[in-house]
Length: 55
Figure 1 (cartoon, rainbow, N blue to C red):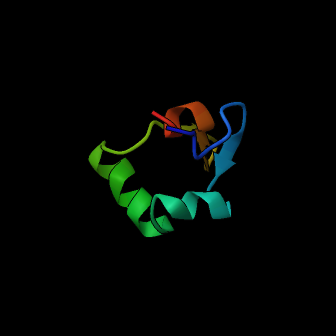
Figure 2 (figure 1 turned 90 degrees about the vertical axis):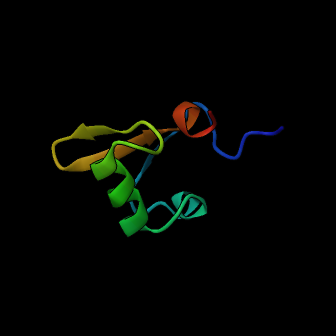
């Protein structure tokens, strides 16, 4: 199965590619519940790695 996201790229909230997973509110709900793809925070910025999104 081909990867939907580039493995070497980091995605931030607002990137149109993240809309494939759900809207901004859905991603926030997942983060709050501890489900969904792995994410990283740098300050207030939420970052998703492409390799984590493809798994």
